[in-house]
View 1: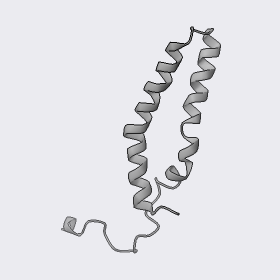
View 2 (view 1 turned 120 degrees about the vertical axis):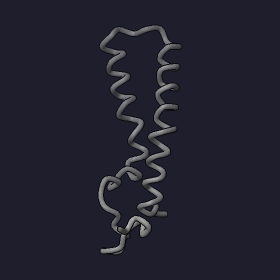
View 3 (view 1 turned 90 degrees about the vertical axis):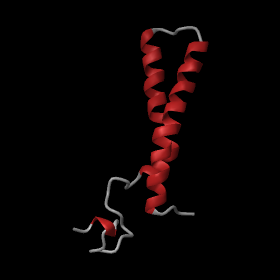
Length: 83
């Protein structure tokens, strides 16, 4: 099931505002439960965790910065803004 452009934008916002901070808290909590590894190992783990979080959501973020491909050309998103 493919998500519409607007649905992907909304989900991307939810993921960035709620999911990412929750993921950061969980990752730091798990790292604090372990004995502190050497600095380079800890750095590599944090870099890996920083990349891994985005992989499952790649399809949601793809094309979000582009214009809406489903929009009708010449039609504004918010008609009340016309002056």
